[in-house]
Length: 158
Image 1: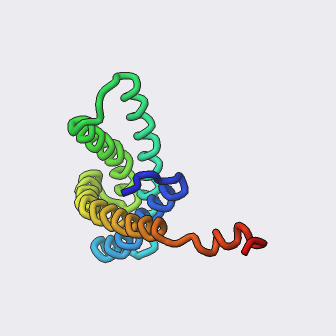
Image 2: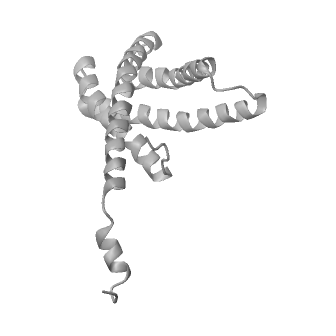
């Protein structure tokens, strides 16, 4: 499987991940929490933007820490990475959700735990599906004949 991904592909991967998550979470959240789809939709959009921004900042900081300290990205480092990322996201999402929904910080914390429990399988399924479809597409592109391009390369020769 080719692991070479362009910036454009990474952008569309992240965008697809977030748009599908919003499409699932906004109606589900509106139904479960008894708020309008617009109200919960805006909250999910804000959380999505926070998560994407935090992801970029946190990963840059983590990479910088790795260069400075010189640790390997083994199982422990990846577990620490995931834990610290989630704690940082929690610290921004809980107050936002509490304020937006007019609920206590504890209720927002419990809500965030539910969101995390949704995103664990969602992330696994989304990325597994994406990788599977991408592998098929890359294989199809590599197997496609270059007939028309080759024929156009030398139009005057027979």
